[in-house]
Every structure is written in C-alpha cells, then in structure tokens.
Length: 275
Image (cartoon, rainbow, N blue to C red; front, side, top):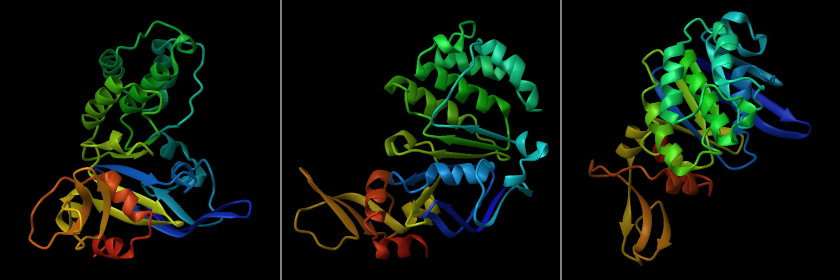
C-alpha cells in the first residue's frame, strides 16, 4: 500500500531522512516509535503529501503522495497531534465533511462517539482538548479510508479514554486497511499494534511484526550479575533484559525496553531483529 524509496528530507541544514526506504502493507496496525526530533511527524506528513521530499519517492495505493490527487485524498485520513476544530457540533462536522470520503459511515461515527461518551450536539470549541481529539479519532475511523494515519492520538486522553481508544482502534482494522500510529507513549500501543517501526539515525532501523520480534528475542527478569544478554536495565527484582531466543520459547514483547535498547545503537540486537 505504501512504498517509500530513497527518501531524503531536510529542514534547512538539518537532514531528517537520508535515503530512507519503507514498505507497508494493508491489514496491519503499525506503531511508529522514535526519539523526540527523530522525524516521526515529518515522515507521516511525507506519506500524506503535506511536505515534499528533497529526493526520493513516496506512493500510496499507486498515487504519488505529493500530488495530493482527489483519488488519493479520499482514501487517506490524517489525525494530527495538534487539532483546531471549527465552532460546529460533531453532528454538523460529519454532515459537512463526511461526503468527501465515499465510505464514510455516519452510524459508525455516532456509535464511536457514544463509546467515547462525547456529546454530538455541543459546539466542538466548547469541548475539552481530549474530547475534541476523540471526535477527530471517531471521524477518522468512520471514513473507512484504506490508510489512516494518527500522530500522537492519545495526547490529551485520560487513562480510561486510552483503554477505550485501544478497544475501538482494534475494531477499526480490516484486511484492506493500513493504520499507522506514531507515539512517544509506548505503553499506549500495548496489545494494539501488530507491527513495529522504529525511526532512528535518519533510517527505519526496525520494521517487524510483533510475532517476528517475539520469535527472535526474549524479554524477562534475570538475576543480578547475569551477563548473557543483549540489553538490560537494573530493577529492584533484577535485570530487566532482552536475550536472544535460542529455544523457540515465547515472551511478551516489551516495547519500551526494546525501544530503549535500539536507541543506544545496539547493533547486535538490530542485526538479530533484521535477520
């Protein structure tokens, strides 16, 4: 669905991506992780055609993103980190905007608003930022576009709302849809994404399914003093560690520990994951 080839992008004299290549498929929820300033939002904007690369190409469903053609736009919805809502109700917003998306489902929109406990008859400008974010998320899901991009969607949501978000998002994936979620709050993606992307040092260094990661490495607590690990952090109970999976056992992927390991430039771990 998404093909990025040799993408180079700069802001002034700062290079964010250098010959970045990435391929994403439908039927997956991708989690995009990276340090602050790594370029997560900029990568999403390149995919959506909101900024243009210095070199390289980015296509979605065969359309070049930067051309922003109508057939491209009607199959893409972008939920930005910062939102600015008009002084209309959610119901009016859906009525005025939904027709730009051929597969928009108003009943689905209302059902998600109800799950989020958001009023549909109150001006959006009178809602809290978290409630406004829920409206945009609900609308994005209800467009049923083949590509849904979300940049820090859980910012502004309280803990119960984050639980609702994960539940609602899990129900929004179909085999014809690709969802990309960028966040710095790693725990918010727990039990939601099925594939992980890590942007580091101007490149996508990891593009793997969660199952593939679990097949290659284990996560667990080791006794203090143990040295046979790929990466570890000291805790009260021992070493919270990543080890190579040599016996085909299974452990739940700890994304926060994995991300911390990758951004220390742990080449051994990165090589194992990319075998």
